[in-house]
Image (cartoon, rainbow, N blue to C red; front, side, top):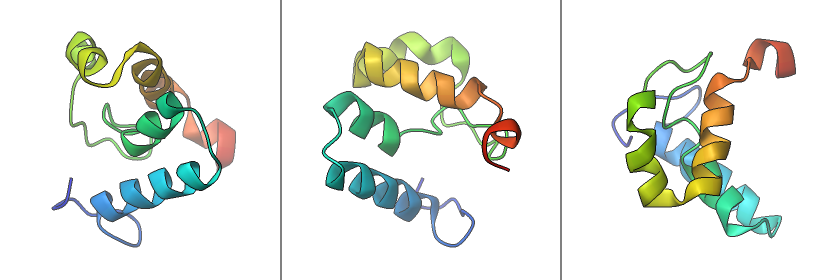
Length: 84
């Protein structure tokens, strides 16, 4: 993730900034973890995948079922419909 680019910064810097923002909001741990890894499966506007959907079980084992579910929902929800 550190070598990948993002809109205005490195992808890793973006992920750390998202997690920092969520932490300042005092969200549950599963939301914080999901925020840090929100594009692990890629997304409509950021198609680079760090893991494919067939690795969901592995991701779930690493981050927990709630965080993985949030990550999956982020990957499968249309970003164009929600905030573009």
